[in-house]
Amino acid sequence: MTLLALGINHKTAPVALREKVAFTPDSLVAALSSLKHLPGVEESVIVSTCNRTELYARVNPDDTPCLLSWLAQFHHVDKNDIASNSYLFEQDEAVKHIMRVASGLDSLILGEPQILGQVKQSFGDARHSGMVSAEFERLFQHAFAVAKRVRSETDIGANAVSVAYAAVQLAKHIFAELPKRNVLLVGAGETIELVAQHLKEQGVGRLAVANRTVARAEMLASQLQADVLTLSQLPAHLKDFDIVISSTASQLPLIGKGMVEDALRQRRNMPMFLVDLAVPRDIEEQVNELGDAYLYTVDDLQHIVEQNMASREQAAQEAEKMIAHQVVEFMTWKQSQQSIDLVKQFRERGMQQRDELTEKAKHQLAEGRAPDEVVQELAYKLTNALMHAPTKALRQAAAQDNAALTQWLGENLSLDMVGGNEKKEG
Image (cartoon, rainbow, N blue to C red; front, side):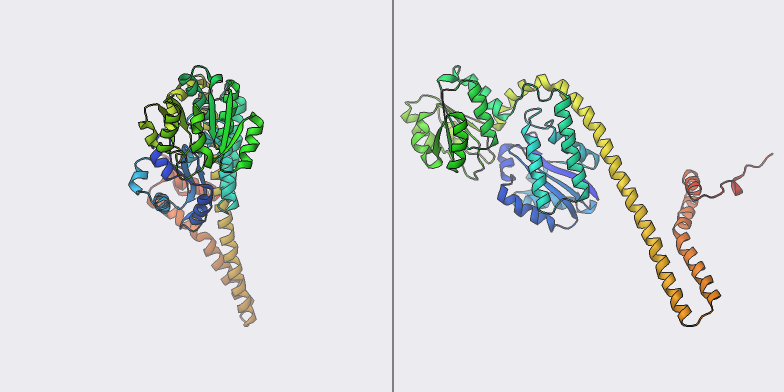
């Protein structure tokens, strides 16, 4: 079986493609169920965030191409579009990749802490769907332990940054005095919570939270002393805010060009700064066509991200060395499991041959055959059965003139290697 990681992320694909292959919580359940019935797939985990969609799977080598076809068919996307914007890692490289992802080394913002929780959630969903067995249990638990060590033993988490932090930094560049600005947060998930924390640290004056579930918005708003809006109230109240930051799981845009245009007209064209952290997007990209609206997506935050990454490069190098060592450790375990499986299979086959021949001998005795004849036939056939595979291996090694393999087989079969190979004295 081959262990592989197939995916697209912020480095390989634009947001327009990433949002097409993103999995919602509901579609994830259906996807895992679909993978369960895909030929050749033994185990699988799907990781889907705003910056990446990845399939981790243990498959038959011949069935590897079917995963790409499955991903394209599931999302009704051209297979070639995914193929040209994706990456595929196998075996130890796949192990290395999941450890780097869980540790935040492959994130848009180096060392982003949220990704570990997202990978854990994805693993839990896959386990609940029956797509996790012994090897993936070991792999992902190992990856989580590595990520924890990276965070505790290096400075990768120093001066914590995230997409949320980058959005607030960008807002500071646009508006010099954040305390005087009114901010609307659309959504009430983890990303918006982080945005809210960073905004409060910057002393933002008025905050409001709009969310599909009012109870969830009220819970977040109570922590921030913020106002609460429903999504249906957005058209009437958008004009009141200088900064709008959105991150929801909606499949359709919540804020359209017309809504922003009306808000700008009521604001008498005072500028509005909008950040869309969602995939799929919450804010129509046509909003950028409006003169006084400044819309940024997660891809637009790359420049700020690069600035914040500089201080973490040394920590990342230390983490890479740590991960390289842990990859070797996991692959050693994996190979040892394969050896155990082979030994188990070899012993089971030997015992099966023994039982079959013993049963046949019993029948012969019951039919009245002479015990000496039965014992001799049993010994002869059992010896031939057990000697067949080693004899075949020795003959093949000799036919290939492979002296090293011949010697190795001889030593492990406790054979006298001197015999016909003795050097003749001159």
